[in-house]
Image 1 (cartoon, helix red, strand yellow):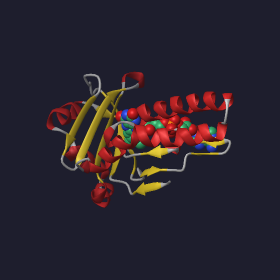
Image 2 (cartoon, protein in one colour):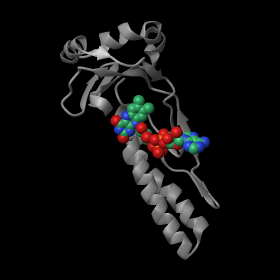
Image 3 (cartoon, protein in one colour):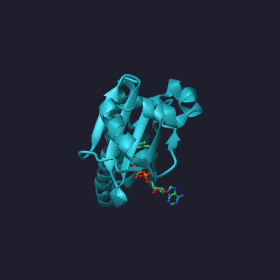
Length: 172
Ligand SMILES: Cc1cc2nc3c(=O)[nH]c(=O)nc-3n(C[C@H](O)[C@H](O)[C@H](O)COP(=O)(O)OP(=O)(O)OC[C@H]3O[C@@H](n4cnc5c(N)ncnc54)[C@H](O)[C@@H]3O)c2cc1C
């Protein structure tokens, strides 16, 4: 059965040069989450998420809101670096389960099940779903494919339900 909740957060990211990070750095603060990680060409990607209720303030002056939300230790580094890209962002981060399988078809990854990126579980769950579906197809091709796909739908709910509920409860 499908289920959905609106976006909890919104946010913008940009790529920076001259902003070193120690692997992945994650700061979770009341009303904001900040994620920094190294990416291509020696750049650092910095994401600043805010509660979705702050969306209009954030969008009114993206750069000022983004910088104001940074943790002081990170802000110091950002001031010494340079922003290499425009800000990109979204407020469309819904939380939903779709009906993800039927006779002869199935959905995986974000298409099947999406939750706010705040809990950082999307890639893990996408791999989990792919693995569950691969097992279901293997079983189904040996017997009843439709019921194996229905089993996949149940298994995905079962194994991701806790993360979905946890995401909905996350501070924001
Ligand atoms: C801001 C943000 C931060 C995140 N942080 C994390 C994190 O820290 N950890 C984590 O685990 N997850 C994180 N996620 C979630 C994660 O990125 C997704 O859950 C994951 O990428 C889903 O994988 P997917 O294969 O289902 O979809 P995608 O990775 O979106 O892949 C779908 C692909 O299909 C392509 N496509 C779309 N339509 C068509 C078409 N018609 N024809 C052909 N190709 C098409 C798209 O271009 C895309 O390449 C984050 C997401 C966001 C938005």
